[in-house]
Image 1 (tube, helix red, strand yellow):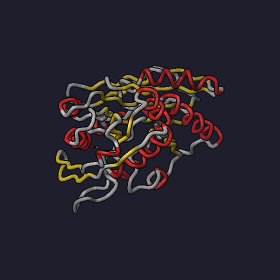
Image 2 (tube, protein in one colour):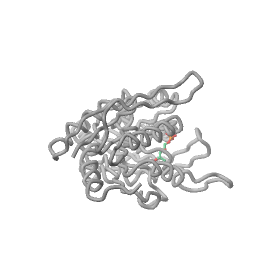
Image 3 (tube, helix red, strand yellow):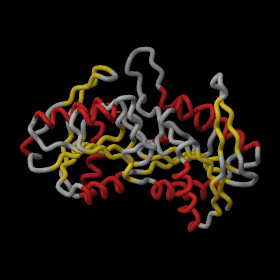
Image 4 (cartoon, helix red, strand yellow):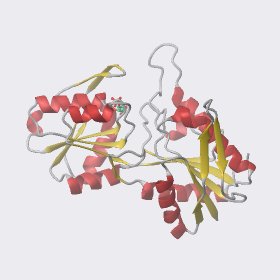
Length: 309
Ligand code: R5P
């Protein structure tokens, strides 16, 4: 089975790792070149510099800046099909838009299912890492195409267990409990979850933990996403007011809106670590092996049951 992996910018290393990891599973995988350039007026031009006729194509794009990527993704998938690709899958280590899974204020769009529909107009399958599913129970609730959600917990747990053996894991809000509890269990470490009130995009209040339970341990704040950083900044401030040791921050998705990383350092984070679902200097925990296993299953499914488009 011939697989052509087409990486969007900043995804070349992941694409190459995936190629290597697919080979032992019997795939003849090669990384092709996907050029994406912008005209001075902002319009996108995508070019596929690789033969894809008869191949199963895997587009690799982390959706950190989804509005900028959206049209280029669609153009890439459609062009691969025009050139004869048998199937076109998407490996999106970070899947955007899943947090807007409800109408929080009158009139708002519920973008999680809308974005899912947009992606499945172009792709036959999707593999991603820990999408922010809260009110949506599983990806199947919003996607109809085959999907695989890879959990970063085993990789994060291994990093914490070996790097900070005296850690207490701290979830900064109730939504983080699903990740923190799993990581704590795998690493055999204690955890606590704080409660958060969000008053605005950059206005967040977090409750105090019980300091006595965690005083002699190194706090490791774990959140699935750090975006503005406010959730974790509040958690850092409360831990520091409680007289606890300086904290380490670990996130699965290093979204880091402007100023977020600096604000975490200013709030006392001694170290900020992320998985490499979004390319960032804080990346320390690779997810390629987890994504490769998911891609193997999805590619096998696509070969048995070719997409009917
Ligand atoms: C929300 O529930 C997520 O788990 C994160 O806590 C949130 O997205 C972080 O956002 P920010 O960094 O903007 O506070």
